[in-house]
Image 1 (cartoon, one colour):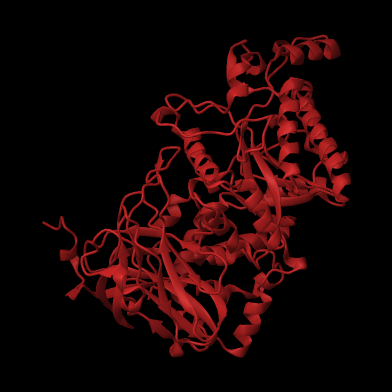
Image 2 (cartoon, rainbow, N blue to C red):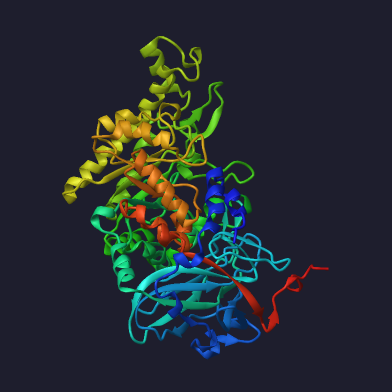
Length: 609
């Protein structure tokens, strides 16, 4: 059967090659990608057996999970829905009767609710923290009787999505713990995206016993020293999701036993800090001004942690280190958001308009300039504070909020002294001018490296300095000098001039880093991809010279388990060649045959006429 085109692909800006991949899926039967013992699968599908029974109801009254009957061609049972609101429906425990090694799938029915994440959390009772499960792929309305192919990532609100979670050795008496998003406030604002609470669902759990060879594969797929070639980065995204110590742990738990060696933990946005013991920066606070909601959203999280009496940076470092993962304090060189959402990136920015970049015509820009020693020293002092918490280094995100230096008074003065010309007398792309601007960014990098070396001597280790870039001198970044002076440990290529980093760009920078102490990593885009495309593109990047990968917005990626299983194993460079069969197991679409006792057809949609 020929697979439908994956319209979701268009949403993430993929190339024509992806459409070719999608059209070829129909040439291989789904069964050829099944697990060896797929026919022995056990469904735990009667979720009305969850405890406590008082948390379940037929009408879904506040504080309960609503029980709804369903059937597919493979299984019939009772699924659970949880509504937003207070009181929050409590955690549930579901007995799992299977023992030994199994592939664990979570079945979810996603309702078509505009722009909402539809979050549910699961963990085995023996797990230290929850894994979040949110929608992946493209969800559409069921407006007719549609066919579905198990390998696509397009589905409707009248399908169940089977998402591979993990393979585990289930002990006797193991239980699945089920929960939902529950933190206040109900609404979180981020760049126009509504993170309002909404319905959550879990339909069933599917347990597939593993063969001996599959058990060995599962054990071999775990991260080892030689496969630790993946960096995670969340750019302070964790503050959109967390309001407790446990939820901070949930942002890190999916990294356990994977190829992730280091978390670039969003610690700074401009002059705001996501820790409390700061003298150089400022801790954001919450607020009710809609037009300042970007930074006050982060402040709402910090307010919650302060009330609870713990520091989120200390908690994140402790938990990451307990898993054997380094945690690096990441900074985005932020400016104010554009009007009308023009919240400030911190009081230092507000107090010092004299330190802002000037445009070619002399007008002031909404950017802070690294040409001023006071600016650089403030940032370095903030970094030192994070290192004092035990962070393993610093990452500077130069891929956002360019420029970092303008036509500022000290820059113009020193350029004239050096070349006898005003910057306005040369072309915008004159290499003398670009190199001169870049020299101030290099001074910044030297000052960070000097601080890291000072602090590293106290710990008898070299602390990490990572830089995420897009371009070089055209973005005021003298990468060759950084490499030559051994300032950077990781150079991360972020997409520029194309939706993804190109193989040509990788080859260009690999020529600079080859034989040096700087590791070349690719920031792997798009954020959402079918696992097979992740595998194929990773192999192309490796062939072009990439040493590893960085995963922007990992806080979103870890919540899509059907993709995360592939993202998190990208360090297995040699094994990727043989993993085509596995990648097609991770996401399956199962049409519902009946729902709440009724046949599933177009009449289920309220506006069918």
